[in-house]
Structures are given as structure tokens and as C-alpha cells.
Length: 257
Image (cartoon, rainbow, N blue to C red; front, top):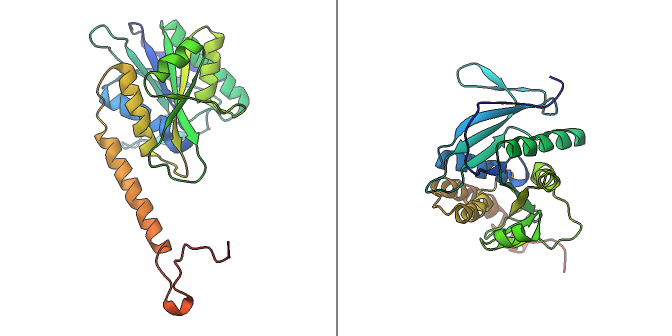
């Protein structure tokens, strides 16, 4: 395989909107995309393979395997609403060249399907602190789309000069080049490899964008498990030393400030 290829089953879509959730900061994109796929009972219709992905295969339960890929799913809209297309996958391209080729290919493919708007999902890093009440930030290809996402609870970014790495940013850039409307929606996150709390905040926004109720029970369960783990990690740190050692908490700094 010398170039990125998409194999797909011809599917008739009505005014489709694409949500892209690929691996990234806090795994927010992956969590959101997987959750949407399950909630909407979306069906797979296309698979993207690329030599720019990691050179590995994924083992399956039945003893078989599959090549690393990105996969497109669709769910029909109800009551005249747009069909929903979801892109999720195992990895993003490993190189700058790969990021350019694969992400432009995604935009071209969706435009070929008659796509009207793309939303990429990512994380907005706040460093190493767990964010209990995450905000949802966003940027878009044009002022009209910025205004659109703002109506649904997204705070437009004002961090001039900061970067959005990988597919979450590149797909928005290529959408603008190809004269398509697109927005990057980012959940505030920090410290966690898998941030279910931030994914929940993003899913609430997406529910409003789609005009539908999205069950969050599984995300809530994962969030609860994460917070329980964090609490258990925190408790030993906050145990006091014996009185003969000054009675300070283990988490207190040893220096004077």
C-alpha cells in the first residue's frame, strides 16, 4: 500500500454531518465517537487504510486480526434531520506528511458524499489538574459557524497563538480550503489519559447540536470509576504523619512559603 485508500459501500445519505473522534488528548474524541456510534446504532460503511498509520495489526477475540484503520459509520436522521456520519479509529498518522494526506483525504471523501458540515472532537489541555466542571471550547472555519456552536454552549477560543495538533485541527483547516463549514469542539481536560468527565461535557453539547437526547449512563459510570480511583490515590497523600514528625499531612510541602 503506497497511499491512503478508502473502501466503502455506496450509501445514500441525506445532508450528512460528520463527527470525527480520533485518539488524542484525554481520549475525548475516541470516547465521544464510540458513545455516539452505540447510542445512534450507527452502521459501518467505509474503512480508511493508510501507510502513515502505525505498522501493526489489532488482535481480535476469535483469534483473527485486522489492520490498523479509521472507520466511518452512519445513522439516518429522524424527522427530516441530517444523517449523522461518525469517524473513529485506532490511530492518527505518525508523520506530518501523513497528517496532511490522510486528513485532506477524509475531507474530500465526505464532500463527495454530499457532506455539509464537519465537527472534530478533541481535548483542551489545562495541564496536570483534574477538571471537575469542564468547559467546552471551540473554533471554526467562519464567523457564522462560530456563532452557531456558541448557541449550543461552546466557548469560542481566544488563546491566540496556541496550536491544535493532529486531525482535530487539520480537518478543520482542509474543510476551509475545500469550502466546507467545520468546527473543532474541545473538552477542557488535564492529567487523565481517559477523561470521561470532559467527554460527557462534549456529548451534552453534541446532543443540543443534533436536537436529541443522548443517554450518558455509560459515560457517567466511567466518570464515577475515574473519580473513585483519583480519590483513592489522593487519600494516602493526605494521611497525617505521627505527632513526633510534626503532624503535617504527607501532601504538604516540606519547605517554608
